[in-house]
Image 1 (cartoon, rainbow, N blue to C red):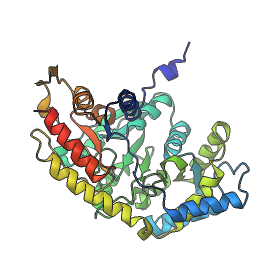
Image 2 (cartoon, one colour; image 1 turned 90 degrees about the vertical axis):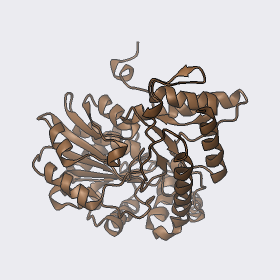
Image 3 (cartoon, helix red, strand yellow; image 1 turned 180 degrees about the vertical axis):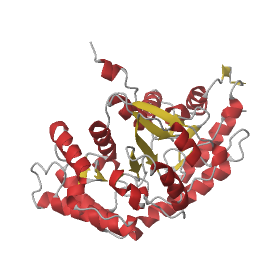
Image 4 (cartoon, rainbow, N blue to C red; image 1 turned 45 degrees about the vertical axis):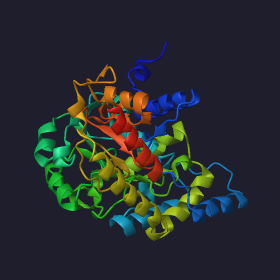
Length: 392
């Protein structure tokens, strides 16, 4: 019999939708997949060259659990250059993707009964990972009317004596929202009152940014010691399958993550680590072409979706998603199917429009769906036209 631990763990909604889309494709149905958060670019040549060189240089042995020393040094330089954060190599842990980095932190910090604050919408795995660590996820809601941002008052109202961790994600998946420096500092004023609360700052979309300056909450001196900054190369460098993430944290937290990882997976892929040195050491101008293309697609999809009645949109400032509020359709019957919630709506789009999206319920917001625009302009135009026709 399966353990209660695994039975309590929900399946990833994004992966589940992708699996359903693949099933329909096998049946010969032309599905446009806008459900996965994966850049549709190839990994840049200079990064691939570094990986090829690593193979030639015979990097084929187990790597150190927390990452190669020169990679950790490059990560320290990246944090200093891009974020104004001073970390030593002993504060860095390299993992098999940012998801493992987040899981490590939760397993190291959380005890049964601890509460984890999740400003919603949040990435689907935050709540699942917290649950796996036997903590209790506490959702702090937001809405499209407030650009999917929580207020300091909301944050303070959610804090209890059991609160141990709060997870921030900016630029945000699924909404594309970016917290400004001023907004983070206002939230930071609240957190400074509660020295037993730790902050996980997921900055994986940092470089996919359309103008709002990125700010790391760890740059607030009073919060530096208890903030864990998470990043990786999957999104900005089109390296999703390379599986490299990392943290910068207080040394005792890093040591805990290193200890846990040593018993779970050991060090991450040796070739991918060598390629990551090239990626994060390069000027960000080398990946700007991808950001520029995402920005064009953002303008296109916002323009097209704004013409569909009932789609309520904010203007995302980062990442490559839109998160429209589609609650206008709740209670309506379309193509013989009554739409009760975002799950029903996303399923309708898959079955009738043959477009794969993800229900907002997986992200802590039951009134929205997530649509990825990490797709070609032709696919975006065709997908939105199909959605419009399916809702007639």
